[in-house]
Length: 530
Image (tube, rainbow, N blue to C red):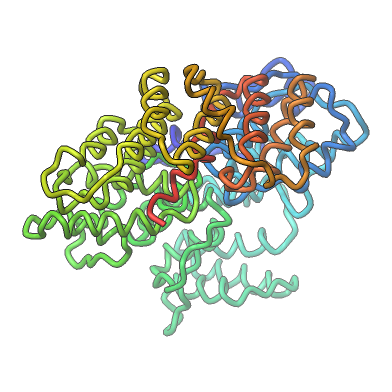
């Protein structure tokens, strides 16, 4: 359930009215093997069907079991989605069924619950503790497709705590109080003891004077919380189920503050577009009694306040952006959602102190014209003293993001880099251009040769070479797993030589876009406010 799906969810969550046997457009491979099932969006690049070629299943299994699925950078997430959702020929080896189960688990943890349910329906060996019917039903509940979710209860008998409590919740959703009470009694007799869910079901019928707080950690909890009108808890939403957060954005009836918090989680995870997050924020601001609480909300409110001086408005935006420098995904998401506020600011001698941060945020939002505006500080009378090399660096970052003439900008950066520290920083940036398959000009290559950083950050140099070897062998999946294992959520911590080899590997498997994104992240540009 990615960003291009969400508009359809807003139009009507019926898009996900499906059972675990839902049909996807399958390649010919999928007619005989679930490895061949593909779940990428139309037009989204897929890896070659031979992506597991030349890989040994006994080697792949621990790599898939250990790979991170949380706290991914945008570049890492692109790679993981492409690896997990691309149709492929089955890897050869006795561990292939276990690998297929790991593929389903990874898809689920990436927030692709709908695709996971469809894949798991075809598996002989599902991931431990996961049930395809339960996943599909629970997501239908989260999306508000209650009739579809509850219709599954009238089919084949199902055992387990989830299905026992589903009967009670579905009865409550139909305003069948007697049926809900009977279902709870039956669940209790089967040894199911979920005190919160029992209380929530009774609260939905109006028979509980002191109802519990709402819970949003599952579709079933979300549905009954909404039905009973339970008060949202003070603690933050969990970030471990971004699919639920994305569903909450589109679900009618939830309080606007809860939807806004969910939208932030889903946008950071790449499951919704930041424009959808912005729509939720606009709804929140339209509420009569709304008072901004978070730094992001304060930034929007402050910029909208026409009586606030320009420097105060800029300070509020800078504070929100600085808070978002915890990781690349958050900085990118917040930069995009605050882009209207950044664009509403003027470059003055008072706002110039934030020029570097605003330029970096503009690059994150791919507003290159805006980024250029914030490099014009030297033209402002009374502005703080600046260095030409800093603005040349910003233009060089723009090249990594896909904007500008690499030859002209690279030559200018070499000219402006006069100190030893600046030359080393420029040499690293030029090396990252190479990682992204961008050719630096001759003077930049000379600078790279003479002033490159000293190695020393890599714990296992052979691991990087193994990634390149895997790519050259056609083992794209293995190359991706190795890359994500090494980048660790912050590529800027790695040696530039290692990053360059990883970039070469990603370009070789057809993932140049991900290589470019990782190269941009490896500059540490998202740490501008720290």
